[in-house]
Amino acid sequence: MVMPASNQVWPPISQNRLTNLYQRMDAWYSGDEEALSWLYATNQLQTHTSLWGQVKRFFWGTPIPQQQSQRPVKIHVPLPAEIARMSAQQLFSEMPTTHLGDMDDDSDDRGIASAAQGKTLSRELDDILDDNAHAELLQAAELAAVFGGAYLRIQWDTTVCDHPFITAMAPDHALPTFGLGGRLQSVIYWMQLPPIDGVKLNYKLLEEETPGRIEYALYESQDDRSLGVRVPLATHPMTQGISVDDQSGIDTGSRLLASVYVPNLKPNHMMRTDPAAYHLGRSDFMRAESLFDSIDESYTSWMRDIRLGKARVFVSRDMLTMGKPGEGSTMNMDQEIFTPLNQAPGSTLNQGKLFETFQPAIRWQEHQNTCRELVERAYAACGYSASTFGSAGDVAMTATEAQAREKLTMLTRSAKILYWRPQLRALYAALLDINHNVFHGPDRMQALPDVEFPDAASDAPNIVAQTLNLLNQAESASIQTRVGMLHPDWTDEQVTEEVMQIKQDDSMLPDPSEKNLWAAVASNGSSTGGVPANSYGSLASNNPATARTAEADYRKAAHESDGDAINQPAAQ
Image 1 (tube, helix red, strand yellow):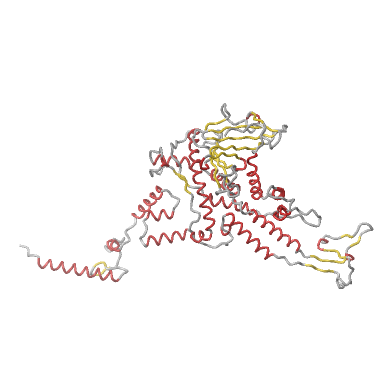
Image 2 (cartoon, helix red, strand yellow; image 1 turned 180 degrees about the vertical axis):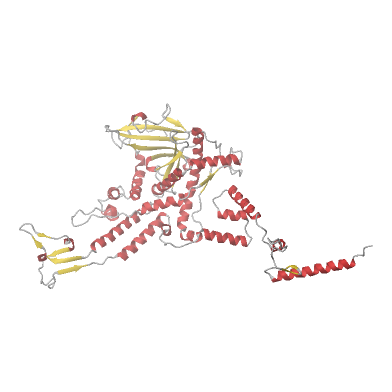
């Protein structure tokens, strides 16, 4: 891919259908009510001039009444944003663990000579993947749930940081090129820059990334739809500090692309035939738009019932204070609860009553059941169980019970990890390359980092302790196995060190077996260790059978000793 020519429409016309999809998903995510009303009333998917268009129009696409008697209120429930946030938390509530050089003779260890070299690389990568990187992964996962995918790119600034860092990028400001198998070959990011004071021109910064190189270009145009002409980077204050070579680019020092695209899920069944979207993922919202719209309509109806259900008092007009001719009636501060009637007191209509009260019923149960059903349907359409969002209540559950109740969520999470893991491995490898080239960090040779996501659900500490205690009593698991079960996120070296420490601690205690208890010496000097004894020796035991066996052995030994003394020849 090369930088686009001047004065062309941007984004390109080939991206129009994809841009429309991104706009709809972004409107639900941001909760922009004006954008929802405009998109579903005038979007190309709606033919509002036809009878069929009137029938299939969404709630957000219906015109808002402009009469003064009708309150123009529509309520948006931020359920899509909640689903996107939960999707990110399911993947990156904990940072995935990474390591290099496990020396298991696979292709991931190419170029690493020893485990010590792998540990050095692992520590270097852990230092780079700090809390800022964790936050960017959370942001990218949330964007992927909304738009069907997200980009992660590597950036660096030697004046403010001593290592490269990663940033998340939404796909609605990127133009990718995919090769065979859907592998990202290059990508162009663009950003609308703020205007320059006193200059009525639009500026766009384009950043093209190819394997081993990043190129920058600044475009100046008269309007925001045209790309305009390319101008030097020094033209705009925000780009004049970018350090580039004579070809307006930077070499990364890596054979890999300094960006990766992570699809949310595949295939994109709504746009699988569109060449521009064939390799892109699908949004979690894609099959739930009508449900989101129905939820907003239901909650709007519920709130309308509440407004109409306010208690009202009808009073005769004669009860109001009449003003001067031409001024009409006046009312006090509580006038909002009165509804004037033209009938006078004592008329047939109100049968002589000066006041009439009206309190309509609020259909809260019907609305609540409808909204709850629609919300659970929306969760399922997006690939999540309702219990993931707390619908099951605060009930203590084991990990097995939690996984059974949240099976759909676990399946969706496992599917998304399949797309995230290989892209993170490629991104981290490029991160180490750039760290080596720019900041003189260790060389990864040709090794690839291993990325492991933590388990989604874990048992409570007391349940884990009971399980390990039962395994120990049954003598069915070694110390190393039990330590591994207690700390599933530890490396083999950490587990081995813990096992050795446990054995060292145990060696300082006496063997609690009964035979060693008999041979122990108490602090008072007793040869039986303070254990009661009789003429036959140490017989104390909590087990009567053991005491009887010890007494029999003592008698037998004494008898044999006497026999030997009798048969022994007399001394000469």
